[in-house]
Image (cartoon, rainbow, N blue to C red; front, side):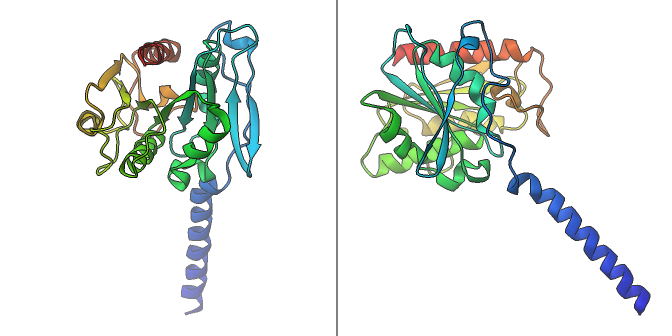
Amino acid sequence: MRRFLRWLAVLAVIGLAFALGTFSTVLVRTPLVVGQDAVIDAASATLVPVVDVANGARTIVAQPPSGTALKDTLVIIYPGGLVRPQAYEWLARALAVRGYTTVIPEFSFDLAVTDTARATALIARYAEGRRVVLAGHSLGGAMAGQYLADEFKAGRQPVAGLVLMGAYPPDGADLSAASLKAVSLNGENDHVADQAKVVDGLKRLPAGSRLVRIDGSVHAFFGRYGPQAGDGVPTVTRAQAETQILAAFDAFLAAL
């Protein structure tokens, strides 16, 4: 009996250690640090975003550098699930040097589902009368779609555009009758986002929404956070994928 209890205690300790190891990556997030790995070209190297804190919530803010022709559009980026905001700093900096103020909010546990409507406060703080484009990667894209669908049902349309990256609106998040513009960016070798659901998600986006393929790219190439379990194998470099992603943003923003 004592031997059984000892083994039971050992198994309990092992189980507890496994649980702590599994959930520690969710509960303990890495620091929010900007400026370490975000240069896409020579121009973006001259700009370092800041971390703004408002009402206890942190946001990476990339302002266009002095002398840049300012655009009348604010870009908000919802990060993917369990991905730190700085993973999308490369995109924020590249857009900022093109004149677009770009912000990336930090969510609790890096899960946009914890505060789907965060964009409302971000628009109030950073838009300053400019139109807004909401972008989101993976879970962040799904929650961006959910937020806009909820706003649309309530008779509000807070943004002019939506950019989905390896994402699709959740079932029931219908934006097909909304008057905003949308585009869905999809990595050719993305094995994380369900490809059939990405295509089907176009039905819930406004009329005229397009699916843009990022040739050779994978799910993890939208952000700089390393390889992702279950993802495909890229047939282009990360730099080549980022060039395509940025070109898709340029075209979409210019057409608004």
